Structure formats: C-alpha cells, structure tokens
Image 1 (spheres, rainbow, N blue to C red):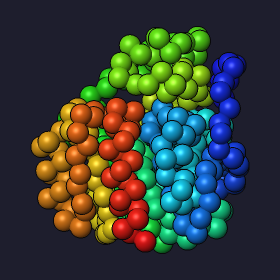
Image 2 (image 1 turned 90 degrees about the vertical axis):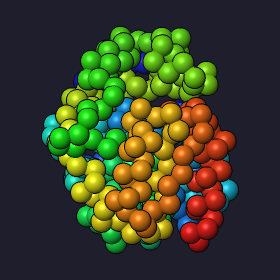
Image 3 (image 1 turned 120 degrees about the vertical axis):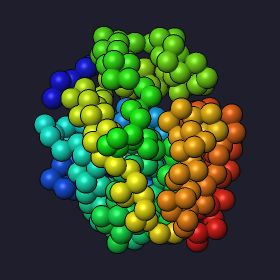
Image 4 (image 1 turned 90 degrees about the horizontal axis):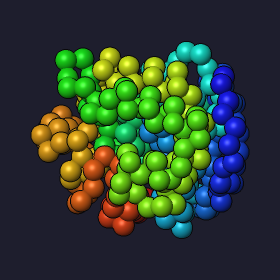
Length: 274
C-alpha cells in the first residue's frame, strides 16, 4: 500500500473497525436508535465525505458509513474489486456489527454494490436506496467520467491538492465538502480505483437490479450524465418494485448539489419503511 501523508479533518462521528471477509474495515457511526442505515459510498468517497448526509439522518436511526476496501482507513488488498467482493465486504460488516436487515443507502459505485448485495446476500438487507448508480456494463455506453480524469484527480491529491483545485472538477460543491475531498482523496488507492473503474464496463448493473424486491427506492439527479432520463426509464421498466425519484437541479453527485431534496426523499422513504 502506498501512503500519502497529509493533515486531515477528523470526523465528528464515532470511528470503529471490524474484521470482515478477510479484511479490516473502517466505519463511522452517527446517532443512535433501534434501526440502522448503512451508507455505501462511491468510487473515490471515503466515509467522512458522507458525514454531512449522515448527520441529517441520525435522528431517525443510527447511521453507519463505510470506508470501502482500498479507501479511507480500510485495508487495501491487491485484488478483489469486483461487485461480489464489495458485496461480501458489506454483508460481513453488517454481520460483524450485529445489524439486522439495516436500510442500505448506496451512491454511484455504492449503489451498484447495494444492488449486488441485495441479489447475492438478501438476508443482510432491509429497505434499499440506490442513488445514481452507473448503468454501465457489457455493450453499454462507458462511464461519462474518463479514466484519465480519475487519474488526474488522484495524482493531484497525492501531490497535495486544495479545495480550490478540487473545485475545477466540482464547481457546485460547498466549500467544506471541497476541503474534505482535498484532504481525504489521498486515502483512495489508485490501483483499487482503477480496477473498480475497469469493472464498470465488465459488470452488468441490470443483472443485479432485476433481482431486487421492495422496499426499494431509485434516486437520480435530474441532470445527471450518469443516469439520464432514458436510463431512469429503463431502470423503472426493469424493476416495477422500485419507486423512482428524480432530484431536481442535481447531477450525479446528488447530495453535494441538492442536499435538502435528497435528504427529504431519503427520510420519507426510511420513515415509511419502518
């Protein structure tokens, strides 16, 4: 593992570690309650970058945010960045924490992982929220953010980036979230990210999506280049069990661009699924 030393903002949530699926996994925990929401972040989003969402849900339930393998403070294996690997990690963490069918909230890669988890480990899952997953797979259009863009962002982060530099890629983000990404993106291992990126085109999202039952919510940004209007229509047709909601004035990075509407939709779904 290559380490990149930098000064980082410490999370406000409670930090913890568990052994699962042969790896040491880091997570952050917010709030308390009889039920739990497990947040599964995207390809270059360490757990702390979801703190601003977790804190808005923590009065409803305990919220656990995961550092995926190869990100944040979790282990970085040399191999194992396919959806079944990630899904087995999440199932193992859920079991290690003693959680019973928690609500799953996944964004981007995390939403693909939640779909795989629901299909391969249904006993681990309660209600599921999938937010703007790449609909990529064999024979489909590629992911709209290029490999070169991810490489550039990672290399800048490893060299020591700033919130102003991150803003070039995410001009609509709040200053605090830009700063967190600048500080924590260096914890994302390049080999892990690139292996995952390759699998975007090799693994079919719909092979998992069609196997999911309710309660199930699919959320997409109204102007997302990742889930277009046509893509959202295909998703809805492929699984009639799902509710489908478009978040106005949001692209792929939904909560960073329209936090209020995203949180409102998630809270309503979580409350109704009790």
